[in-house]
Image 1 (cartoon, rainbow, N blue to C red):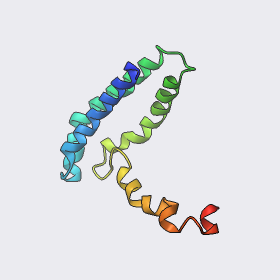
Image 2: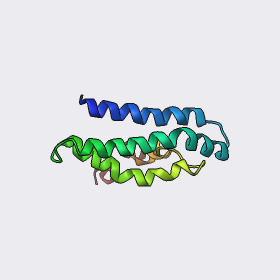
Image 3: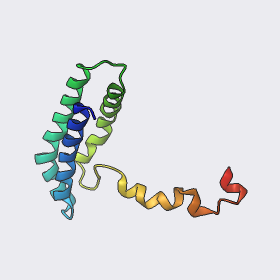
Length: 115
């Protein structure tokens, strides 16, 4: 609902738009595309988040969310330089979801499922 949050989502969406273009490309071509298009967006997002953090109270949930994002951006940055990496881990999460979901492993009546 906050304008800053909405702007952040729009900026992140731009990164996903680049990834849409990268689908099906070779790893080398993905890196080239990301360096040309995603890296400036990524760099701008990081600078913009730091700027926004300086404008709001550090005690707000929004400030906590921005701090969380800023702490994780360095761990996300390698995807820009590696064509085998993805922007997120959605593919992996979808792959393990049936295993992680307790209902898929056993019926709710088994005592093992309750623990």
